[in-house]
Length: 258
Ligand code: PGA
Image 1: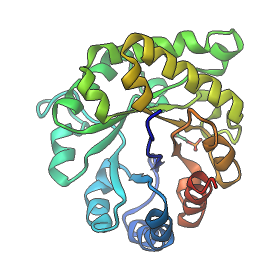
Image 2 (image 1 turned 180 degrees about the vertical axis):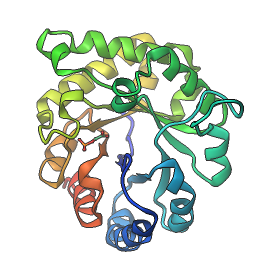
Image 3 (image 1 turned 45 degrees about the horizontal axis):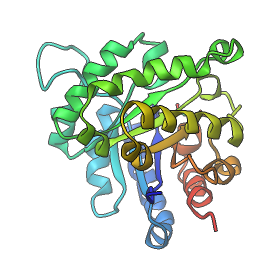
C-alpha cells in the first residue's frame, strides 16, 4: 500500500475579519512547526476569497498551504461574484475546495456545475479537494452510498493523471457543524467504499494513492480515533479550526498516532 501523506485543512467558511488573520497565523504556525518537522503532513488554511491574498503572504515560509473555498468555471469572464482558478493561482494559492456541502445545499450547486469547476481548476494546474457526503435522510433510508457514488461520478470525467492533484473529502451533511461527528467506524465504512469505487471505476493504483479526508464536527477529542482508521488520510475542519490552539490540537492528535 502506498504511504499516503495526511492532509488536514481548516475551512474557515464565512468567518474572521482582516485583523484576525495575523493573530491566528503567528501562534498557529509556531505551534505546529515542531509537529511538521517530526511528521510528514500537509496542513492548509482556507479563508474567504477576500482574505486569501493576505493569508498567502502570512503563510510564506511556513510550509502551510493557503486554500481556496471554491473556484469558478472559467479562467475569466462574466461571472459576477465568482473567483476564477486563474486568479487563485495568480495570488499564490494552489489548492481549492470544491463541492462543499454548503455550496451544494445552500447555493444549490449540482454535480454538473461542480464538474465544470473541477475541470477549470485542474486545467489551471490547481490541486482540488472534492467534497461528497449524504444527508441524514439519505443515510436513514439506506442510500448513503447511492448518493456518494453519484457525487463521485464526476471523477470519471477527469484524466487519470489529474488524480495526482485530487483529494476527496467525505463530509456527512448531518455531521457538519452539528457537534455530532460520524463515528470512526461510520467514517471508515464510507471511506472504504469510496476507495473501492475508485478502484473499480478509475483504477487500483489511483485508489491506493488518493487521499480521503473526513470532515464533520472534527475536534481534538475525536481526531486521533478517526485518523487511526486505515482509509482516513486527513481531516477537513470547520468550527474547531477557527481558534489556533484548538486547530493545532486537532493536528497534533490527528498525526501523532504512535
Ligand atoms: P465542522 O465543518 O467541522 O464545523 O463540522 C466541517 C466542514 O464543513 O468542512
